Amino acid sequence: MKLRLTKIAVFLGGLVPLGRLAWKAFHDGLGANPIEVITHSTGDWTLILILTTLSITPLRKFTKQYWLIGVRRMIGLFAFFYGVLHFTTYIWLDKFFDVHEVIKDIGKRPFITVGFTAFVLLIPLAITSTTGWIRRLGGKNWQRLHRLIYITGIAGVIHYIWLVKADLRKPLQYAFVLGVLLLYRVMVWMWEARKKLASATRTPRSAEVTEVSR
Image (cartoon, rainbow, N blue to C red):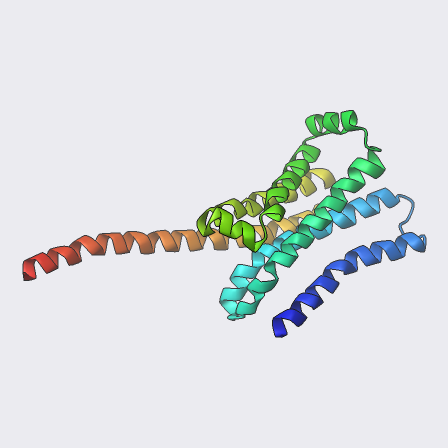
């Protein structure tokens, strides 16, 4: 029951940024350049939700709030949803579905190239987020695939930094949070590798002791 209520709260919370944009649009609150406001807002929320998704595992372990894992998928799907809105704003309101212009833009402008890469990497993660896909791929293969979220986060932060150029405060804040989360992941991998190595070196010794005792 608690998890269900939490999921409802997360779902409604995930719609708030879209609701704010709609409210501003209907009340002439998007300023002189509404396309830029929509693009920045949807891009910001895509990154925020990607970082939130990445933070679920360490938060769950440090706080012992194991129910958090139950909302990770929904947050990740909202990240993809706002990524779709971000890309749609660019391809529709900015480029008017001119595919030739979009392809030229992706090839010529590095920040567009990196941003498009981040968006493309989100697609297989969204598609395979269901329980059925976890079963089809197998737990380990699914986990390997979903590590792409780290590359997506890195590409998203680089996209933002290269886009802004002047006032880097906000993208650097995202970069700092991502750096902390990546450092945590690296430390976990190193710890697990050390445990495996220690267990592998202990096993032959225990076998030798058994042979001697015989």
